[in-house]
Amino acid sequence: MKLNFVLFPTKDTTKKVIYQKISEGRKVLSRKSTGFVIQEKNWDKTKERVKLRADNYKEINLKLSEIEEKFNDKSNVVTPNEDLNNSLDGCFLDFMKNYLENGLSDGSLKSSTYRKYITILNNLRKITIDIEGKDYLPFRNFNNINFIREITLGLKNNHTVKGNIKNPEVVINYLAVIKSVIIKWNKYYGFDHHVNTFTFFNFVQKSSLSKSAVYLNENQLDLLMKFEPDKNNKKTYFPQLVSKNIFIFQYHACGIRLIDILLLTNKSFNENKFIIPVRKTSDIITAPISTSIMDCLIPFYPEIYERVVGKIKLIDLKLDLKLIEYLMRLEDIDFEEIHYHDISNIIEKISKMGGYEDYTMKLKEILKVFNFQIMIQFFKEIQELPTRFLFPMLKMEDFKDSFDKNRYLNIREETILKSARSKHNNSLMRISEILNLPKMTGHTPRHTLASHLLNNDQITEDQIRIILGHSNISTTKIYLREKHGDGQSHNIMKRFLETNVMNRYTVKDKIFILNCC
Image (cartoon, rainbow, N blue to C red; front, side, top):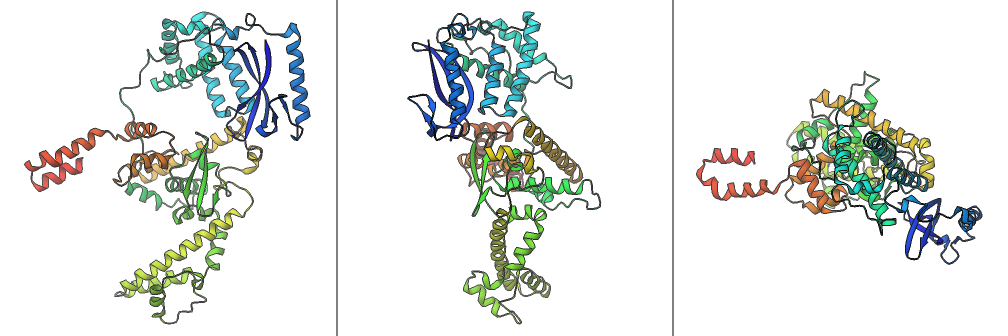
């Protein structure tokens, strides 16, 4: 047998984790993380050691030498017969636990994923004790279709915290996680003893009826945007203001997920766009800055906004000559001193006078140019502030370690984030009750945007995929079909009615039928 040290990728593409690999010929007997994460450029492949230029090379190289010494000591060598991981008699529960612990320590597994998988492992451990009478689950049991049926029923009947039976979607998710861990075992150890995973979902199926996504139509969204929380209620005013503005921000920023917007900082935009790291896919999407997004942030940066509005003057703007010509027709206009609020006041006065619709329209165009320049300067000044979260839901000092080291959130940080999400959803629920809207959550803006994009004939499914940040068009198709009822039958039937059936009806009937479609 031979010991080697190799690099394995992490979610951070610039760094890799050092693994110890034991092999016999071409067969890999075991792989185990050392817990050390380094940059690939600091790794010497020939010597299998960290290069001297790395800051912690002494500590890491010393540890690697200690591992080699233990391996060379015959009393510590793990042979295939002694290491049950390499056979179907090995314990799946122990393998999964070690896999999760290693992933958490080397940074290849998010702490939120770790917690979710541990819950699944504990459920499976409880079911194993019920079925086998002991806390030991050999890999070979998964090749028995009757055992698959028993654990499927066990997962389904294993009550939740509230005492409810788990729904089929949850059971499918649990089985998918167990299957993924077995696939990893097959990859590393199952060359001679393969575990069959094709029967995992034989005894479970999705609910016959899928719940449609909750989203707001355009009228409901407009109602939310005009909503003003009760200032007299000090307990609910600020939380509702924050939650409302986060919702609108999400809608105008590609429907980004709540977790991603809560972790967005004032350093997350560059020139005219936001650069948004997506935690779920470890990808990055961009969204344009806009006055609508600026309006969501003004309540939390009022001093910066007022300073910017007072700083920018009409004479600083790049205006079309025709717009300047219209301005010159107005009396008592000092081009060097006129500001944004002055143009707003002029529009208000002219609107009351009547007969000046042309002037009003041109002045509104100037107001748009003002808004654009204010927006650019507003985001520039926010970016120059010390690093902070864009919305006041989290404190940067609670997450500073993760941001400084560019790593996944730890369990303590995930708990803080979970609490913030819960508070946000509670505020949205109260707003829903006040405005008589569908029950909103942090994911409703994403479904709202998807629904509005779907109803726009000029936007294709692939464009919706890009906006929502899906890596595969099939994900988008499933998302639109299951959550928004976008089946092809709708469009086919609509065309049929328009071309074949409509000739039988009056104009009034036709309008009714098309509206129903």
